Structure formats: structure tokens, C-alpha cells
Image (tube, helix red, strand yellow):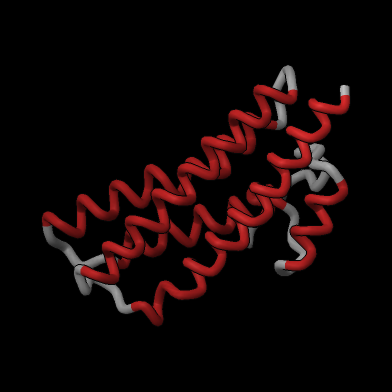
Length: 144
């Protein structure tokens, strides 16, 4: 991958427990994973056959799949834990929507499950990591 996709590992200031959770799932940091995820979504969208249905699915996948990292990028600039929790929640919703559109893509036989199973697994791992992050932030707020 080119240097333009290099990211600052400290950019997100997630709690250590989240980085530990992330290490269980391949050890890459959140910004890197979400950028790689977005690029994989772009490749999936580009690989769909040319039809009206495929174009609609591709558009939806592009919107939801590429916005995950964007919302987390915004989260690092949050002015409060509440704002960060909200941004993480939106990213979780976008991951869920992306999973939905991938499932429809498989169900409509536009791409086989075998081509998308690793991407669907990455969605579940990102959901687990971000859910942990959100819970950690919420518990930190209660302790204040």
C-alpha cells in the first residue's frame, strides 16, 4: 500500500482495553483497519456486475462501508466522551448496514459468499472492538 494510506497509530486515543481487544483480531490499529476496510468495500462495489440492481447495491455499500472510518476519524476530535460515544455508535450502525447490504448481495447472487466471507468476518471483529470501546467510554463517564 502506498504512503498516502499511512496513518498515525496514536490518532484515536482509544483506551488500552480496546487496543488489547483489537490485538485479539489481527493486531492492526483501528485507523488502519477501517481504511483497509473501506478500500475493500470499494473493490467489492467495483466488482459487482453491471446492472441497475448492482449499481444500487454498490452505491449503498460505498456509502455505509466507507463512512465507518470517517465517523471514527471525527470521533478522535470529540469534545467530550458523550460525543465520542455517539460517533462510535454511528460507526457501529454503518457497519451493521454494510453487513446487511453484503448479505443482500450474496442473496441476490451478485457475488458468492466465498468472496465476501472474510469481509463479513472483519465487520464482526470491528463491531466487537467498537462495542468494547463504547462500553469503556460509558463506564469512564459513570466514574467521573
